[in-house]
Structures are given as structure tokens and as C-alpha cells.
Length: 230
Image 1 (cartoon, rainbow, N blue to C red):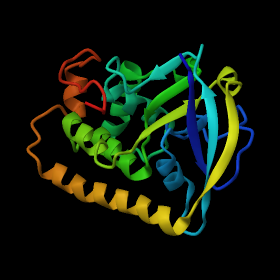
Image 2: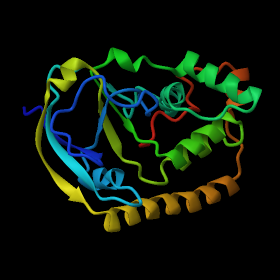
Image 3: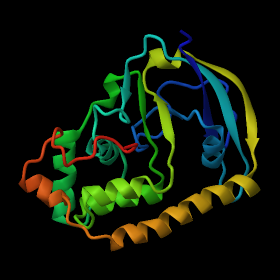
Image 4: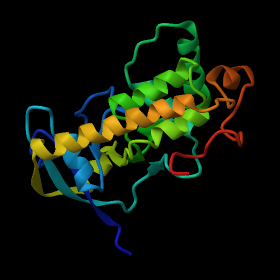
């Protein structure tokens, strides 16, 4: 069985040698090398409003890697959100938000640095706003789940350990044209934002974060969606 896959890293630069320890600690899953198996998404992630980018292509050998797959039925959407809020920076303006963040990290958090590789959905800034709305007790966990499906965020694969970095090999790149892929990226975001307004109009009789905290809801509660793909 071939354990090798092709992955792409969208960037403003050509990255021939991914380097362990580089990157932003406030990315979704902390410091790591963020990739996707979808070259079209990589190109969207690579461009800015002003500049073209690059979809760097690699072969990644998954054999022997210790993998945390947040998309599997072993985990809930709140595991994913807990990892996000542990790393991403966002404004905490109310006591309920601070309490919610602490509860999620303590009861649903995972030590991503214990793994070689993380698989999970990617949260662009606008989508992270939906997670923040959940922490602010303004949408239910069901609404959050539907909101996070709106933009077809795509699966990201994140190298976390030195061992994982030793298993990746550069194969080349493709140019991501700003005029094409920034338009696609913005259209995806605009469509999701429009659909999110429809989600807000839905009857919300599900679990809010304060219900979860007061009820001491745990990860095995059937009312918590198992993962975003369901």
C-alpha cells in the first residue's frame, strides 16, 4: 500500500525546503507547515488582493506518522473549536466569552503538539468569526456546525514534528494568478456570508455555549455533532 500523498502549500513564496519551527503560533493549529491536497484551494490561499502567489507541490509519506484527524468521528466540532480558540487571537469583550473559551479548552481541548501531523478543516478569518459568535453565546452549536460547512473550507494537513518534516519532499510549483484566484476566494467568502445570514434566521432551540457550561456537557454527548463532514 502506497502511503505517499501529494500536498500543496499556498504561499506568496516558493518554498523548496519547509523548515520545522517556522510559522505563526496563532494559526489554526499553532506553529506548523500548512498544506492541502486540493491545488485549487492552495491557489486561493496563496494570493492576495495585490499579488500572485504559488502553489508549492510536495510528496508526503504518511507512513509511521502519529496523526490527529479532527475530521474523524472520534472527535466533535467542539474539539476543533477548542483547538482554534487555544491558538487564534480574537477579542474577548465579555465574561461569557472568557468563560466559554476556558471551558472549551479544559473539556474539549487537545494537545496538538503531541502529534506529527494534524488533519482538520481550515478556518479563514470570516469563518472564525462564526466560532467567536458561538463563544459569545449568540448562536447554537447546531448553527455553528451549519455555518462552518457553508464555504467548503477544505481539509488542511499540518506538519507539526521534526519527523513529519523529514517525510516531505518538494516537487515543484504552479503560479496562482491573482486575477483568477482572488476572485474565487472572495466569491467563496461572500457566498458563505450570505448563507450565514440565513442560518441566523433559523429557529435556534439547540445548545448555546452557556447551556453546555451549565449542563457540564461532555464530548460524548449525542447533541454535539461528531465532526464537520456529517
